[in-house]
Length: 84
Image (cartoon, rainbow, N blue to C red; front, side, top):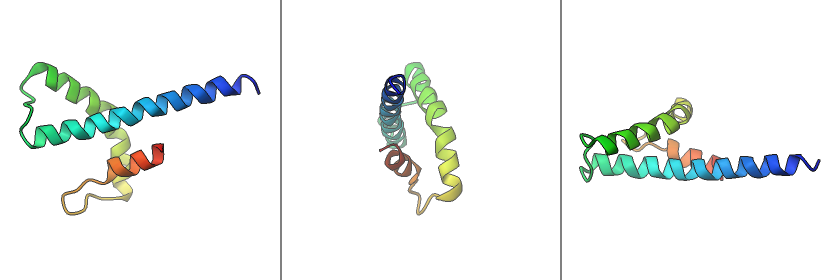
């Protein structure tokens, strides 16, 4: 039982970090969509690519059940609610 507590704490830390990755991916997609940042910049491209690779597999699974409605993707909201 004593070994279970650190494992649960580690799992909570990982989920907390993933929460911030999802928020960063959403903000990055908004900034690219509105033309605030340009993906032609190598650093921006690398960060965007990493965030996409970390979040898109989970978003894709959620989009199977909740499609994009009216141009608004609700999968990040559903994922964040699930992480919470």
